[in-house]
Structures are given as C-alpha cells and as structure tokens.
Length: 346
Length: 268
Image (cartoon, rainbow over all chains, first blue to last red; front, side, top):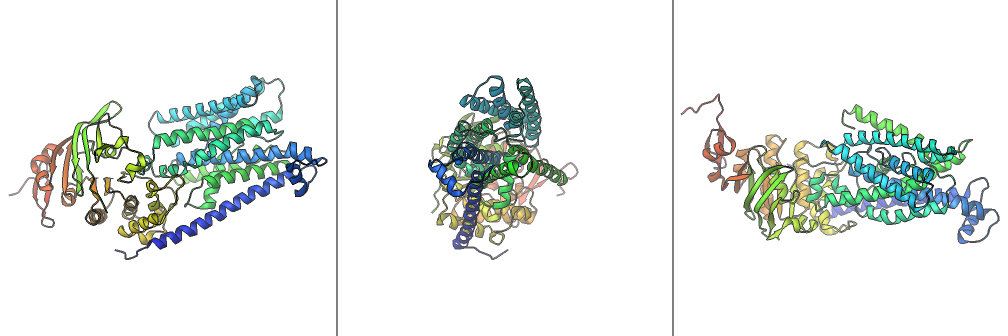
C-alpha cells in the first residue's frame, strides 16, 4: 500500500493554481468578446475610429457615424453578443445534462421548433415583438417535451433521444420551408434567417427581448451549474449530494429553452453555435472546473467572429449562420465518426 | 466528533409503477455499527437503500433520521448527515481524482461554491484514508476497478457524513480489492464511528464484516441480528432456497456458509 499523503495545503495550492488559470481564461475570453465587439462597430462600408465610435455611444452627433454605428452596427453587434451568450449557455446546459455533446438544442430540434414557430408567427400571422418570442418559447418547450417523451417512453435514453431529436428537427425544417413558400414575397434574406440564422437588418426592437431573457435566465442557469455538474455523476449520486434532481432538471430545461427561444426569435437558429460552444470551452478549460460561463463566452466569440467573416471576408455577404454552419458541420461529422470508431453509443 | 444517528424505517412501503417491492417494513439501523443487508436478487435491497437516502419516495410509511422523515428534510441538510454511494456512479470524461473527491463537498457549500479550508482538509483526509493521494492528479478513466472504487468511497468520505450507505461496493472487484474496500470501510467505522449500511452479495464476506446482518427476502426481513444468529442453514434455505452447511470460519470465527449444489453431497 502506498504511503503518499497529502495535506490540506497541497489541496489548496492545487486549487489556487487552478483558480488563477481559470481567471486568466475567462479574462481572455471576455477581452476577445470586447475586441470583436469593438471591431464590429468600427469596420463596415466606411471605417470609424474607436474615438468616433465612443462618441456615438456617448450620444454625440457624428456625421455619418451616428447612423451607421448607432443605428446599424450597434444593434447588430449587441444582438451577436446576446445570441452568442444565449446559444452557448443553453447548448452546454443540454450537453451537460444529457451527458452527450450531440444532445445540443440545435441538433435535437429545439432551435428548429422555435424557429418554425417564429417564422410562422411573423410570416403567416404578421405578428412582431413579444408575441413572436412567446410563440418561439412555447414551441421550443413543446419540442423539448415531445423529444423527451418519445425517447423515454421505452426507458432507454441517450442515443434514442438524439435520434428522435434529429428526426423531429428534420420535420420542423420542412415546416419552415413550407411557411416560407406560403409567404407572398419569397425573400431570400428572410428565408436564410429562419433556416440558418442571420443578423441582417437587426433593430433594437429585436435585441431588447433577447437581452432581457439573457439577463433573467442566464444567472438562473449559472446558479444551477454546480447542481448540473453533480448530475453528471448520475442522478442517484447527485441526489445523495443534496441535489434535488427533478426540480433542477425542470428549472434548467425551462431556462435553457427560454434562452434558445428568445435568441431564435431575434436572429433565427444560428447554426451550430449551441453545439460548438460547449466542446470548444471544454477544450480550453480542461476537465476541471465549470464550463458554463466559458461556453457562453465562446458562443459570443463565435457569433461575432462569424458575422464579421460573413460580411467582409468574402466577395458576397453571407448571413452569420452560413459561416457557423461551415464550422459546425465538420465537427458534427468528426464526433459521429469518433463515436463510431470507439464502438460506443452516440 | 461523530454523533450517533438513529436511522429507522416505519411501516415503509415501496414500489415502482404497479409493482410493490417492500410492504410495511419496520427496521432500525443500530448506530455506530456496520450493518449489512443480504438477500436474493430483486428482493428489495437496493430499493430499501435508495429510499433510506430519499432517492425513492415511499408509497406509505416513512424513513426517519433522528425522528425526522428524510423525505421532508432539506436535501442539503440531509446530505451533510447521510451519504450514499450508488451501485454504478458515472464519472465525467477526463475528470481527475482530486476533482471528483472534491465534488463530495457540495452539500457543505453555498450556491456559487465557495471553497473553504475545511473543504481542503476534508478532501486531503479522504484521499489519505483511501490511499488515493498518489492518484490525485490522475484521470479516473485510467484507473483500475479497485482504485476507482476507492476514489468513489473517497468522494463519499469527503462528504463527511455520519451515516454512509453503500450499494454493493464490492461488485466487479476481484477478491483482493473486495477485501481492501471492506477493510477500508471497517477502518472508517472504527476510527470515526461512522454508521455504515451496505448491500453485499457475498454472504461470507457479509458475515465477516458485519456487526449487524439483515436477511431480506421478497421485501420482508426474514432474520436480523449478529452474523452468527442470522447466517444459519435454516435462514439460508428460507431466504435463498439453497441447502448449505455453515461452519465456523477459522480466520474470523464468524459463520462461513458452504452451499450444497445438486452435484455435491455432504461427506461426513
């Protein structure tokens, strides 16, 4: 038998080293979000200096910049941050709760449900504002319940839930196509928004509901992150550690679906952001420590960077979802190939 | 520093869906001792253990900890007194031993997990007690079955509960690791006075390590008491339907059960 013993000081030293590393990572991610946000405000058809941008935000009237930065770029960049944080946080929540990187809301149909409902509310019913968000959240929760119900009726979960979700997502995509085809004016931009997500033509009226939802549901979810981490050890172990498993699961599903629904009602289901953020955050922070806040920040970085690329990196302007889709699809294939090779379930 | 806690079941009825597993069971766990529950498959052992740690709500009756129904206690408060190691806990991919053991501190922490020196001390003690200190930085996935089980027990130790329930802690372990785990639990009981309740499959190990043995069959207690009064040929036939010969174990002087199959007779 071994004779190695550790003192409390050893454990504390470990913990402090880890905490310092974590602060550095989160600081760097926040810095990156701020830098990309600032860049989004500066570049465009005409370039504005940081000083001009700050003056616009402060309320000064700057020729040209007040309109371009204040009315066009600021709401767009703000929505990029808000949707990125929302999708990143909701995605990692589902992946953690269901213990599977494929179980993100954009793979298992929840985003598609919100998107179909929002498209239906806007295009067919002619609604706008909070009513659209309401449609999106009801549909998102409905899809979550449906997928859960269909997957758990047989007892086994996991793989079944993901396969059921993929099927439902495909059905919902066809509903989106149907809704778009019924619209009198078949607007390509509008179509792309509900199919892959887009920030084109963002106004403050779109930003505000998503921002409020993030301000309320984000902290609610983060406050449950420890309970969720315990639930990774299995429901029984979590309960033995004092977690009220069923209640936590309920709160967390409602909050995560709410984040997805409000963000989707504003910008459409920006492809794969929810799916990619958690695994990227996990790669950055390692197996120790919570990946909830890092995943949210990674989501914001992804959306900001992808929107900048989509607007200026190519000859044509692509909506943000097209760029994140290009990033996400290979990772999805990689995950499926890897799980197949290791012989495990999905 | 440990207090003796009274854990008892009163007219406890448990079941899943339309199946009743345990009907109106009364049970008292002797404080400060090692209690082992034995019984055939599907006799309700795990169900009973899950209900005692409030994982399963009773249909009727109650589980009492120091006179309070556990299903009405705040979850975290209960988790500071009563711990459970389930049969097959899951380890997240890549998690290190120290991190996993640290998870046992959750019931002692607030909403946003403020770590304290008490947490550091508890984790260090748990690692040392289970001889897993040298593994502290290793990932769980790389460990052997016996090492892994010691780490899970370390996590339960870090929780610092006075009562610890374990559901088949020796399953899938070879004999040396089984002995290692049971010795460790005995150390814990002797050193800290922790009340231990565990489900075991091996009757002879159960008899050797238990102070108090409970034989369960079809949701009913068929015998309970010291191993020498419980592990008798009559009880084994009644509970397991197996003819046997019980002798005195020359090592521990506890009863040792030798099953008699169809192909073997007793040669006098």
